Length: 117
Length: 117
Image 1 (cartoon, rainbow over the protein chains, first blue to last red):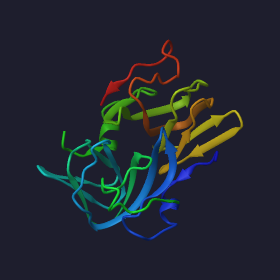
Image 2 (cartoon, chains in turn red, purple; image 1 turned 90 degrees about the vertical axis):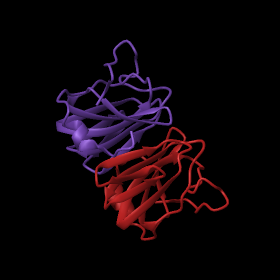
Image 3 (tube, rainbow over the protein chains, first blue to last red; image 1 turned 135 degrees about the vertical axis):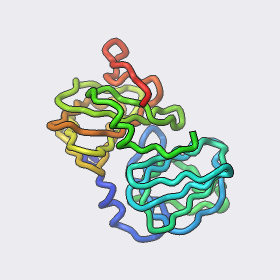
Image 4 (cartoon, rainbow over the protein chains, first blue to last red; image 1 turned 120 degrees about the vertical axis):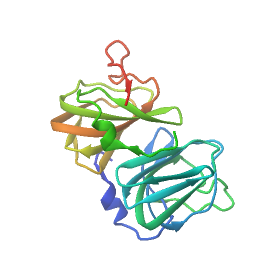
């Protein structure tokens, strides 16, 4: 595993939206890439902050008190417990970090599965 | 603090090499940007993996069994306990993540201070 991880190459291996792929493990967290487009659901994570870095495209992170808009090279961390909804007006590529095993909706019952890239 | 974090703008606020600036906190970790050039020291972190993402430039991460070379959009995680030496042939900009309070050399006695950007 002593090889560089090229994020664009990892993103080229799949097309589905809202289906994060784990590219590395870091201190019991999954480092993931994901393609998103359209609106996700309002949710929150009570036990973890939520890390978003835009690699390509534009992401609106809607919060109850306003919206944070991220372009390439911009990041935002949603603090634990804070309700938010990611919305991508175009196909957008993200780097995400979450504790291994975190459901992406904050609720195991509605969470999408996680795959390896 | 509900604002996007633009990594290039944060990097524009300082010029020193090997002096990470914390741009956000994530699950008891510091998310940092740093400008590097030249050779760092061989070191290891016994209690944490070491996260490197190249934003600009080229980084060689020398390991005892070989070198991993990273360009923009490429990342590598040095597992805890693994000796490594970052080397940048040109000025290179990185995103780093480390548990808050981690000395950058793995040794508090020789660590550089950490600043906020």
